[in-house]
Length: 112
Image (cartoon, rainbow, N blue to C red; front, side):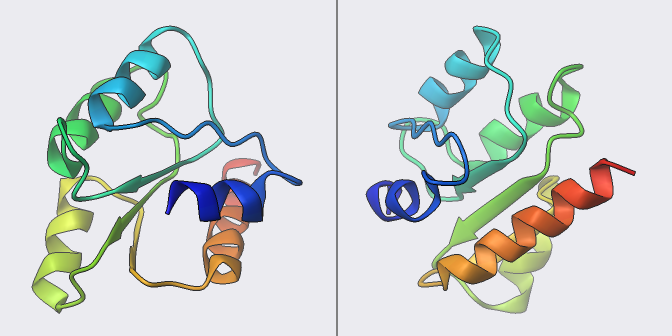
């Protein structure tokens, strides 16, 4: 999934895939700033809920758009992810163009 997203988005965005949620949090804590975060809800080592909480309490990243990806499409799963602090939720498999438009819309709202 990371390779597909990197190839699709690398011409327009700087894409920095991380092997798991814990490494992603370390990378962000090292001072790397991002315009948006796309994360899998079922990440190894540190899953979606465990990574969302520190993001949403961080001074630097609390307003960063966050899209969670998951293989679960039932409404209760979507509600749970949004309740945890994700800004949006996409069910895998998804169309990368849809993700691109979602990211652009979120970032446009932040620029106002």
